[in-house]
Image (tube, rainbow, N blue to C red; front, side):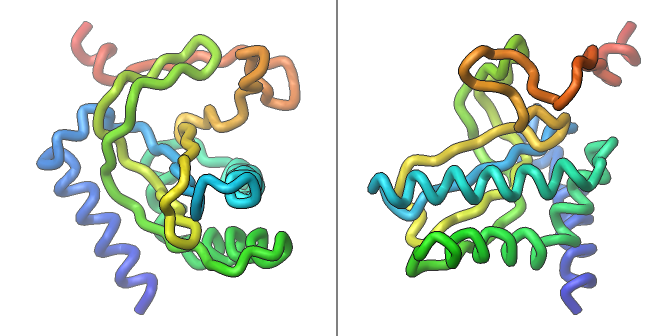
Length: 171
């Protein structure tokens, strides 16, 4: 039954994507909202983000469609991971997850800037989800930028190039 719901959600996002004014199709963000702004809740939020980002990176996602499909089909695993981190750190609340289209402010990762606008996202809400949030881009996989230096942190020296299918079609 859960897989049927996931397939339905995937179709809904695909079909309604254009109706929600998502001008940033092809990008999937990870959005983690802390329980509160306490130092504990903010630290736990980052631990959840780290663990979920690593697990998703290990999936070897190569396309946007694959990223959405994995996010929908692996909801139980993502929530289990988030809740395990919360439990291990003594949090007295659990995580909830949504996949949908949400508004984000402009954000720069290294040399890549993502304009303010609507983006599809995996949203993890921790506890009451009333604290500061953290977000990155799951696809293309930009969650692994060293925020201190602005350099890519891909584990090895690699050249990363982004191409726009839309720009290629227009040309």
